[in-house]
Length: 334
Ligand SMILES: Cc1cc2nc3c(=O)[nH]c(=O)nc-3n(C[C@H](O)[C@H](O)[C@H](O)COP(=O)(O)O)c2cc1C
Image 1 (cartoon, rainbow, N blue to C red):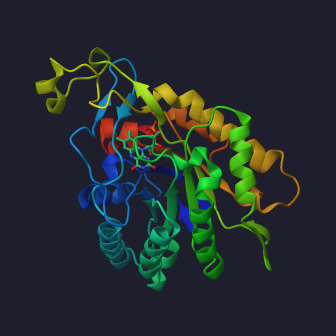
Image 2: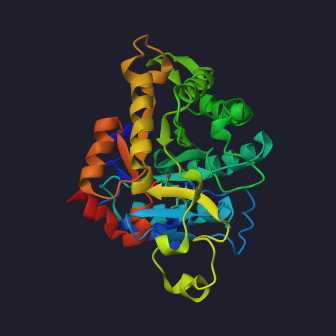
């Protein structure tokens, strides 16, 4: 079990934002699995993302790895809000006593104004008192597949206005749990730059001392600009027709790599953030309270244990969910 801000995640194993957490049926299945402790929705925008035919995902044939060229969900945030309300209402009605599993709404926006409108929608959902401790926000700063926008997590100053909008809402309602989905970093300066910006959102809480507006970091998203050739991936019904004359495994040639292929890099990101936030930070700084959701190549129980050992208090899964369906969480729990 893990407590992150005001949400309780038990067991400490979740799906992360992905194409297999896109619609009502998928979210319902994930929510009703006894092996997930929370459900993360696919990243949505205020009005929905224009998904074109070159968006897709393939699985490698030599390891449990994936390559995808998706941007964000074509469905807008209001659809996710409706579905989360529906699933939570049903769960609250049927489990009077048992704690109900929370949702993490993954969202993104290109301006603080747009993000503020999205936060208002989430807060409207949370205004029903029984839902307040069951809905958190994850700001996705790390999708590598949107050609018009670089993953902002690589350029921390660019997301300052978005973080300020989130932090202002948290300061008015401390029960709002907020996290950031980060891209994989490859050198120390990138970690330091993100943490020095997050430090700006430390504050003094009368009861709990130094805190930070952000309760968690989800590390890592996929590794962008990766390429697989058709002979390196499993041919599916969806790809079989075109595969004969395809030059690359995904139509965009490059996309976001995930699964076994990024496991070591994701472990390294979790380990480095854990050390910087928790081990090397003895000053009572608000950053100490930030938890890490570790994701990247968790495809076996041993990989899950490695993620915990590296410093993750909650472990997340996407590629294995895509390959195995919701039973992935049972496989990992054995
Ligand atoms: C098909 C696919 C779609 C994804 N979509 C999102 C998304 O909408 N938002 C997001 O933050 N991450 C997204 N991700 C990244 C995953 O949440 C996760 O960070 C990454 O895949 C590493 O985990 P894994 O090795 O278990 O797949 C996606 C990953 C895949 C494979």
